[in-house]
Amino acid sequence: MILCCGEALIDMIPAATDTGRDGFVPHSGGAVFNTAIALGRLGVPAGMLTGLSEDTFGHQLTESLRASHVNTSLVIRSQRPTTLAFVHLLNGHATYTFFDENSAGRMLSVEDLPEITDEVSTLYFGGISLACEPGADTYAALLEREGANRVVMIDPNIRPGFVNDLGRYRDRLDRMIARADIVKVSDEDVNWIIAEPLSLDEKVALILEKGPAVVILTRGSEGSMAFLPGGRSVSAPANMVEVVDTVGAGDTFNAGVLAQLFKTGGLSKSGIRELSPEAFQEALVNGAKVSSVTVSRAGANPPWADEI
Image (cartoon, rainbow, N blue to C red; front, side, top):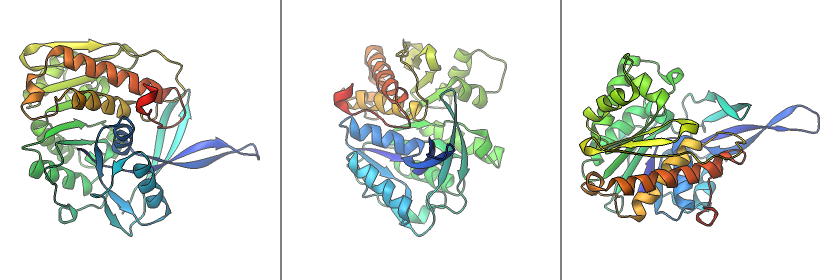
């Protein structure tokens, strides 16, 4: 099972009302949640480890996970509120206003963490859960405790506005990257992580030196690249579609990559370093296919396997 560890929240999506003014409709979301949903819909055994509220929105998130065949047995429940993200769309691109103080997800502690059984072969981390303390420290501790014998993928999806202590965030992210097998970054992420006047390729090489076996670089409409052991690299084009909005695009790309690696038997600690360039290229192509469906319709609505 691929265990997705991180935030699940409610995206409040604007929608027209009869009064002529926009209202907000609650949609289940969150970067890590979206990846879990996409994996479940693609037929891959997936689970979610997150903090969920017992409020109305928490129950909505639980039902959304189960409806997409995501295992919820490792969800940690509390009476704290659900994180809300009010989405603002401009020309198909989303910006967010978050309400996250004292939330069920953010306030996870190490003491809350459940036992992880051998059924879990892969851990996936990402999103704002890597930046928002104290939960961010809890996820870092989970990786340190459980990552040695499992494949680890991280998508930091860096949002500087969530970083309160830059030094602590950089240190925690560096430690997590060092323990990861796959790190997926956008070109913006790379330029933030390595803030030196170097080329993207040079910056990716520095990230590889931190410890991961593979770095996947996404460049929007320019497609993606995977930088592999031994100095090899492969690339795949983006699927060109009419974009409705970009909510969940990167999250479902990650699910497409993981789903393909799972199906080819590449999700093992040793196997990930031995996969052929062709296998990784197929994973990038699948990620592009999955994300292209998501961006072609409103909200983070990943495709089911029969839509690919």
